[in-house]
Length: 397
Image (cartoon, rainbow, N blue to C red; front, side, top):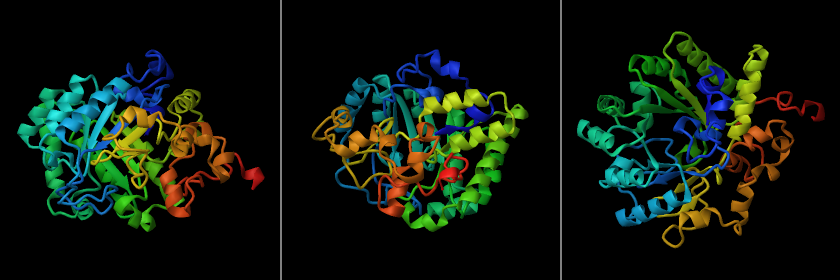
C-alpha cells in the first residue's frame, strides 16, 4: 500500500512510526505499513460463495461455493495460531464473507484474541442489524468494493442493484459507528469514474478509499487488455494525488491509498522533488520503512480450504495447509525455496527491476503480474510505469 494522503499531504511523519518502535503489535492500524518486523497481515478467504458475479474476481467466486471450507472450529484454531504468532490483522474476505453465517462469531473471536478484525465485502448483505452486531463485537474496519457509480459498478458486479445495496451497507455501517471505506479496482472500463468516486467520498463522508491497480489473477486474468497503459496510469495517479490534496486543502481530508503497484511510491516522491516540496526527504524515509511489495512476508493468504498462499492473488501455489500444519509453521519454513526467496525478493528479481535504484522501496513490485505476462516469476513487473531515466538505468540502456 502507498499512502497518498500520508505521503503527499503529510498526515504521517517518520517519527510517528518510530515512536512505537516500528513494532507491528504496537503500531496503530494506519501505521502498520511502516512496521519493521513485517508480521503478516493475513487475508482469509473464508468462503468462495458470493451473491454477485464480479468480472474481475481473483477468487473466481460463485453462488455455490466450495464444499471443503474450514469449519467454525477450524477457523478458531487458525485464529489462535495467528494471534500467538503476532499477526496484527485478520482480514475476512471471500467470495463474500457475509455468506458465512458464522462470520460475526469468528470476527468476535479474533478481537477477543487481541487481533484487529477487518472485513472486505461487497456491502450488499450488511443490514442495520448486522452493522450493530459488527459494532458490538469491535470490528476495526469494513472495506466495501465499488468500481464506479451505479451503471458501471453494476456492470462489474454482474448484478443489477449491487451499487444501491453497497450504498445501503455503507450507510448502515456509518449509522452503527463503524469505520467504513471504499475499494476501487482501476482499469480502462472504469477509470473515468474516479472523479465521481471522489465526489461520493466527500458527499457521503466516507473517510477512506483504496485504489487497487489491476492484478492478473482469477477472472481478472481475462482483463489484461483492460489494464491501463503506462502513460494512462501516470495520469490516473496524478488525478488521485490532486484530488486527495484538494480535499486536504479544503479541510475535508480523506485517507487515500493506492494498492498493488509499488511504482506509485517513487512516483509520488519524484513528483514532490519536482515541486520542491520540503517534505520530500521525509517521504523517502517513509517509503524505505514501507519496503514495497510484501507478498510472502508482510502479507499472506489462507484459502477457504486452508491452503496458504503468498498473497490473495497467488492462488495456484500453496505452501501447505493449516489443516496439516499451523500457519505460523508454514510461514517460517524456509526449506521451501519459493518461500525463502519471497522473504528476500530483491536478490532474485531480474532485468530493469534488478538495476532499479528504487528496488529497496519497491521490492520488485508484483510477482504475480510478472509471471502472468512472461511466465517468469522474477521478470520485471509489466505494470511498472516508471521510465528508465526515472529508475536510474537510462545510461545503461
